Amino acid sequence: MRATARLGAMQARAQSLMTLTLAAYSPDGKTTNPGGYTVPKFASEGLTFGRVQATSGGDTTTRYIKIGDVERPVIKGGLQIPLTAKVPVAGEQRGTGWEYVVLAVGPLDDLALLGRRYLVVAVPAKSHATMRRLTVVEV
Image (cartoon, rainbow, N blue to C red; front, side, top):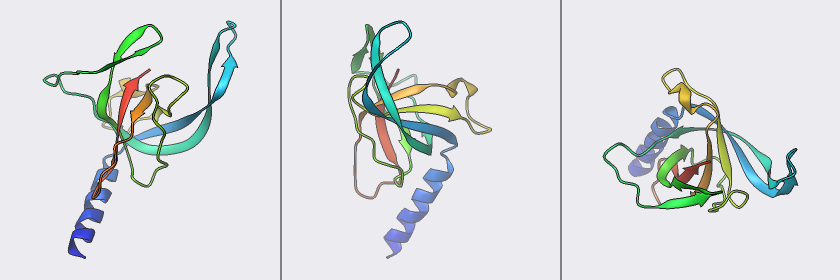
């Protein structure tokens, strides 16, 4: 009982640090853009709070994913959302996994995060979690 109460307190603390407002999108087929190109179409999955945790300067990125013609680094645990949020689906190409867009930042967040979009490439799970740490790539 005591461990459960402590875990609940840790989850509440983790959630209090999630000051970004994120819009979640799931793949919903394809569409044609005004330039005539076929591009992924997305359905809204609603809003959630979250935070971005980028790798620090001392960390080395060991994995990259090619999005279009660009190699992009995979950020392990880079996007963190509440455990109560919908569980996203992962994919390694646009149009196969959920994507999150930063719509608003908190008073202490970096304004450069506004408008950034992240593709979920892995959804790790564990027991006694305080938050869901998604592995993402910025698109």
